[in-house]
Image 1 (tube, rainbow, N blue to C red):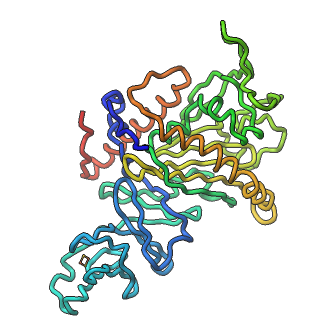
Image 2: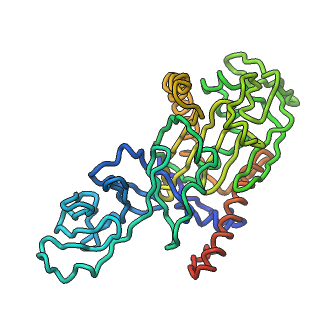
Length: 390
Ligand code: FES
């Protein structure tokens, strides 16, 4: 199904930078592919509408603009004829993978005068969490990637279960869906994953900002409700799951299992949080689920789902079993597939929001404020970013 290109975008005019970010926010690191899928052959990726290839070069992975400046053939069809370089498949223009400099034009001989006069744009690339991350900016030096990763993933040992899946739909719909308060209780009521996690019919919520994250804090929770003139609704459509005796804002399971010390140390004010440039974090007592919504272009995104269990050695084995036996299929499969469906069919703006959508508004505000701060910082460095058009 073709995704509408956000008709009536003017309806988002309260958040002009967010509205303009069809193809994503620049100035961030994005995960694009599993690191073990990148070898000595180029791997083509599209990120924020930019055509890029990545390739392994010794102990580094390099990234380069994929369009050969000679006649526009994708460099990803080429290969390495000399160490540390890529040669275009068409006429053999050969670029240094680190600097982008044209080192040779094979079909014009060793003394080709074009050498040194052409430089192909290169990208900053890092490997983290078993994935390749690319920085897309406006010519600034990137911030260290560890400043952008969820803090608890930087220094703590963890075993990860991850899924990278290209999906239709604008990345903002995916991010808003992830942080959406209401859909988890209604859309996902039929997901098998809910066998492990009871959810109230509704709850009151407050949004708390801490650092670069905003958290959804569930306050009073209601496990059933009488709707005037309609009847009673429990949300337990096809199985009966008792509400937990105790509810917490970590995972909301009410489980008496011990919370993992790494997770406990974070003292998350709420179990669902979101940060720029579109990262969702859902904290359970024994693991954390992350979703990175990576803009491919205005109409497509990469869904990168990661479950992290902060254990090492033999203590990781139960998580391996749980991930491969259940989480991968129930959560990264069926549950997440319901989200995928909604992102494909969302058609907004225009939109008419209701009380639980405060989460969406706070996310847009975070994106807007953070982007204004970034533009100010770039201006101090003499880099001007075009203002979004009205
Ligand atoms: Fe790449 Fe000619 S198009 S070398």
